[in-house]
Amino acid sequence: MYPVWEVPGLTAGGVLALIATFHILPSHLSVSAMWLSLYLENKAYREERPELLAFVRKYTGMLLVFAYVFGSITGVGIWFSASAAAPRALSGLIHNYVWGWATEWCFFLIEVAGIFTYYYTFDKVDRRTHLKLGWIFALGSWTTMIVIVGILTFMLTPGRWLVTGGFFDGFFNQTYWPQLALRTTGMFAIAASYAVAVASRSDDAKTRAEVVRIAAAWGLAGLALATASFFWYRAALPEAARATFEALLTPGLVKGMWVPIALMAAWFALLRVRPLAAGFPASLLAICVLFVSIFSFERARELIRKPYLMPGFMYSNQIIGHDLPAKGVGSETAAMNEKGILRFAPFVPNGLREVTDANRLEAGRMVALIECSSCHTLSPKGLRPLPQRVAALGFTDVDSLSAFLDSLGSYPYMPPFIGTEPEKQALAAYLISISK
Image (tube, rainbow, N blue to C red; front, side):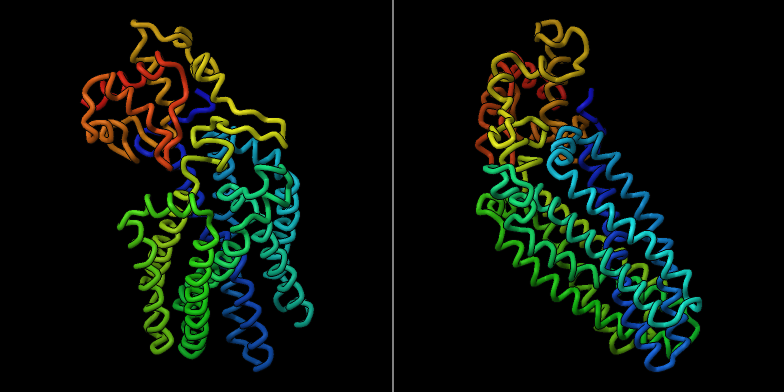
């Protein structure tokens, strides 16, 4: 059913979201950990503290293994799942930002070579050279974030790109700088959390206490600055995006965003006073709490662009809903409404291109897969299950549900129904059949 990937109970977007959210831990750690390492290495050299330098070596060893094993695996997982979940959107991004990604990959090569060189040259080069290697890695790694944030924010707020189609008009959009600030500051809380976990395994109580206190200060500063950056980011959102955000932001999601932040702030504050309270199990639990917050913030961020994959251009079901004259691309909706969406989908099974009385339910399921399954599951349980949604609305006949489908475009977070009247009737019949 390419370009539709049905994942029962979860949706293709759900798979991509889980991989991408976990990827934030190793990827943002890789950008931030070296800054803390350089600070501690400088301190170790100034004060002639070999035990502190031993921690830096251990910390960067963890960075090498965790960030560049799990980070690489999940990075590939993002590309693989994105190519299956939203191939048309990914194609659009590549066509617009292939040179942006190429730039990011060049700096990523510097990053990968840099962490290996930095780690394996401890005690093999002079101090000044070793610090330079660390700075090359730190700046190269942060540059990958500088580049990738432009593409990520373009997917939410494309800005003037919708008019000009220009690379930099989409890249430096209205939310670029606040999101770069949010990710840059938030990454220090991630680095601090892992530093505490590594330090908690140390047998040297003095070094352990000192490192934990320093990491806790970095963590508190990172949380405070990231919180301020979030409100800057929220204020920079277009009015329609803010309205969608407020409409879809559930109380549970709000708690998932802010309760872990409060807990992490309390944890770091405790460690400033009692650094030896940082046991390894508690440190791992703190990382898990931080992950809950990251997942919730990323989930909230994704809500902003509904009903689109690329706002103002491509709907969440990968249908191009608006003209883009600067790129010579036209909306597909008029042709699909006239000829039927089942005629346009590339791999609809034989016999389902035209809706008949005999294939009505099966054709309706195909329409649901094409138009609905990117956000809803067709199974009774799971992520936004359609059977439960239809049952909750109380529709029991095809005509009333069909009339409701006509109104979908009036909801700010739902794409309009696209297709012919027989396809709409088939979709309504199928939805009622699975909601009983």
